[in-house]
Image (cartoon, rainbow, N blue to C red; front, side, top):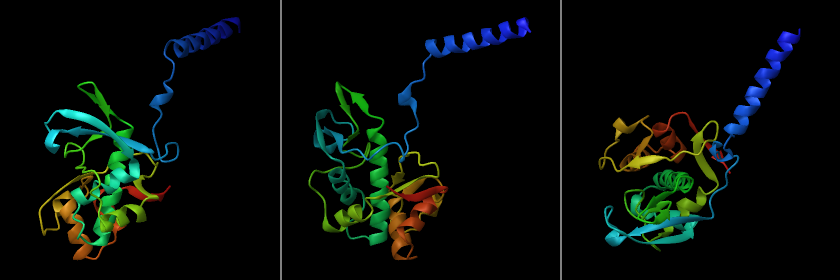
Length: 205
C-alpha cells in the first residue's frame, strides 16, 4: 500500500512540475465565433502604387466594416448579381477577420493586411452602393466549420463566363464562379458558399 502511495505521489509531483515548467499558453486557445468578437478596426499596410512588391509607406487603421466596404468592389464587380456579392462580402469579411488574429511584421511595420492582392485589394473610400449593401445585409452572418473556428475564406478570380467547376470543394472560391452560379443557375449565396467550402455552415453572430 505504501509503495503504491509513493508511486502515485511521485506521478502527481511530476505532473505538477511539468505544468509549472511548461504552463499552458492561454493565447493558444482556438479562436472561434463563440469566444472572439469582430475586430473594431483593422490595420492596412499601404504599399507604394498599390504594388504587391512595393515598399510599405505607412499603416492605416480604419473601421473593420469600412474596410470590407472598400475591398468588395475591388474584388467583386459591383454590377454582379446580388447573391454573388453577398457570397463575396462574407468571404472578404472572414478573410480579413482571420488576418486580424494573425498579424504580420515587415520592415518595422506591424499590420493585419496590405492594400494589394497579397491579401485583398483595398482602395480607401471606394465603396459602391451595391457592394456596401451586400456587406451590410450579411454583416451578422459568418461562414465557418461546425465548431465555429474562424478560418479565412480564400478565393481566386477564375475564368470569366464559366462555372469554374474545378474550384468546387477546394476551399477556394472562384469570383467569376459566384457570378455564374448566381446569375445563370440562380443559386443563393449560401448555396454558392457551400459549393466551395464543404462542411462549413452559415451562422449568425
